[in-house]
Structures are given as C-alpha cells and as structure tokens.
Length: 253
Image (cartoon, rainbow, N blue to C red):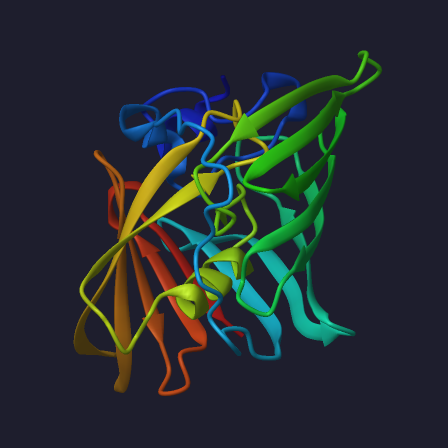
C-alpha cells in the first residue's frame, strides 16, 4: 500500500492494490459493521415516491487542505428510471493518478438497478453490478485477469452504493434519507471497489451549521469506526462533505 493511501486510511485495504486508486472515501471500516443478510422472499421496502431530483455539478477534493482531485456528476431522470453519472480525477502526492467513471441506474425511490464502474490507474479495473430482488450480482475485472463473479444478498432492494472517490453517491444517500421521519436510519451498503462484503451504515440528521458564512442542513453517516459529515443546502443538495479522521474535505464548485 502506498504512503498516501496509508495516510488517509489506517484501517484495512479498501481497494484491490492493482487498481492504484486513492481510497479517500471513508468506508474502509465497514468490515467492523459488516452483515450477511439472509434472503427474505417477497419482502420489499415501500417505495419513496419522488426521492430523487435532478442535480448536476462538480466537487473539489481536498486532502489536508491540498487539492488532490475533482469530480463531475449528473443525476437526471431517464424514462421510468434515473441515471447518475460521475467522473473523478485523482492526483494525490505519492500516488499514481487515477480516473474513475461510473454509471448508475436507479428507481425513483433511490433503489439501485444497475451500477457500472471503470477505473484507470496503475492498472485498469471494471465492475458491473445488477440488483435483482435484493441480490447484487457482480462481475469484476482487474487488468487482464479473468473476470470474477460474485452474488451479494441483502434483505431488501433499498441498498446504498457508496463507492470510493465518487461523492455524488452521498448526494443520492441524502435523498433516500427520510427527512420527514428524521432520527437515526440504517441502510445496507455496498462498495463495489471494495471486497464486496455487505455492511450497514447509520444516517442521522443533525442541527443546522454555519460554514464559511453559509447555513447548511447536516447529516452524519457512521459505521462502527468512522464518521462522514454531509452539509446540504435548503433543498438537500450535497454542498460539502468532511471526513475529520482523514482530513478530507469535498466541496461543491
């Protein structure tokens, strides 16, 4: 593991070493909270009508106050579904540059249907995840290796996908959180660039906070070991993300 990656994460490996990606997103600690959900036939979460809304923009990725990357993204309706696209460039000191691209198809409720990932770094990597009846059917390929297939079973179709270095996934998470109910809410989670172990996260709204003279709604995303702080505007658009333990700050441009 390179020095830069070790500085950001001091837990466990979160990416295949061959990918060369900088694992800035903080869900490496999901292993401590991992679950192995049992199949539950004919059981579905009730849909959240109109959970997703159109959004488009970019994020700056800062590590210790230094610019290390940018992400461009768009979330938009497409027929009876929604499409989310994201592209991230990472250029961190002491690490190989990385290019990450994803395409994500979701139901209007925010439940995932299909996720595709393409990575260019020290080696190329790609993954496709099809979500069917609470099962994530995954095909992954690193470099020239033979593709690896794996099924991951969850108890319900509403699964949060929070992949490394793709911060618009947190914008989607802020939409599927039930703001009317508020309080602590748990979600099954999948990190396609990780080792595919299913886990859980807890999301909870906090008090409004002022940052740089602006007022934001807040969400705290936690695992057993780690916290991610989300700062949202009045329309619940993701404007800022902080990982205090890793000195990572992501801000909307």
